[in-house]
Structure formats: C-alpha cells, structure tokens
Length: 249
Image (cartoon, rainbow, N blue to C red; front, side, top):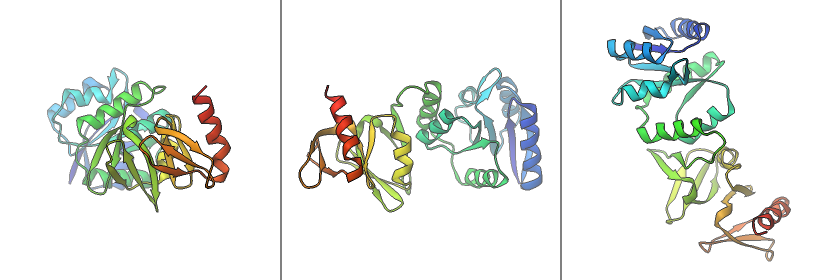
C-alpha cells in the first residue's frame, strides 16, 4: 500500500482526483489533502507520503514553495497542472513528468506508474522548471536531456546541432561531447524552434548562432563554426537563406 497527499487549490479538482485515485488505484491510500502551501506543509510534517500530487499554482504561493520547505523530501512527486502551453514547455525543458488537467484515466495511470519508478527530481531540474515557468517569454538557459541511464543538464548555448537517429536524437555540444537522447528530433525541433534553432533537414536541427556560412555548391549545405557540414533540404533552402540574410543585416 502506497500513501499519498493531494495538494490542489480547486476543491472540485481535488475531489475529482481523490475519487479517481480511490476508484482506479486501490493500492494508493490518500492520507491527507491540502488546498494551500500552509496546509500542505502541515500535512507533510504530520506524515510524509510515498507520493505527493502537487498542483503548481496555489492560492498562497506555488508548489515550489512547498518543496522549498522540505528540501530533503523523499516523496515521489506527480505535478498536476492546467493545460497551458508555457507550463507544458517548462516541464519538457526540465524533463519532469506531469499530469495535465483535464486528464484521462490512462494518463493518470501512466503518471502513477512512472512515479513508482522515479526518484525525486534533483534541485537543478526543479530550478529549470521554476525558471522557465516564471519567465515564459524568455529563452530558457538550460535543458534537461533524458539519456538511457541518466538525465544530463545542458546549457542551450552549448548545443551546436541535433541529428536524428531513428526515433532518437543525438545532441552535439561545443566541447565535442555527444549525447544520445531517447526522444525524436521533431520533439526537440518543436521545443527549440523559438530559440534560434532551425530544422534545416529532416534529420538535422541547427543552432543558428553556430552557422558560419551557407554553401550553395553540392546541393547546398551549412558550414558550421566548428568546421562541420550540415545538409540543407531543397524545401528548406529559401527559408535558411532568408534567415541567415536577416541575421547579417
């Protein structure tokens, strides 16, 4: 039997999650609920749960305030958030799992299954999440990359390019390091397109700051500052030339 505390400031949403867990997950015993940071702190002090269902926005603060009160909290955390594009982006940058309201029974079941396996996200990943949520219009400084056996935190400016490898992506960094990540290039292309990263080919995503020149010979390719060549697809050629043009005006 696993114990759980639900922290959610909307009474209807709290009751709904409680009912869903009780009906679909009898292995989880809800030992307390809270609607604010203060209530959550009291509940966790009283008894640390195995799983903490934590809403991001609370009436008297945020879910991060709860975590800052308990820096050594051993509970597995399932973040629950409203469907907001900035929130989703922030979770992706931090490589932290979340449940999106309104959720399906299947999504809740997946979150519970993942929570049973995962360890508490480290402070640096929580900081990426917090920083990206607090400044949604700004370019995030860092991104968490999920490899097969660990999560590596990388500065966005250190990424030279990304290359597709089947359903995985290889990140090439400025220092020559390569990181093999178990997500598609499209996933990262969608995530990074507003931060000076451009999909120049079906298999290639490039940091615009790392481009030295566009070479028209041999069908067209990019020469990068580190000396590497990256092909440009026929349909991307005009867009690439226009963007590089505008950068050098």
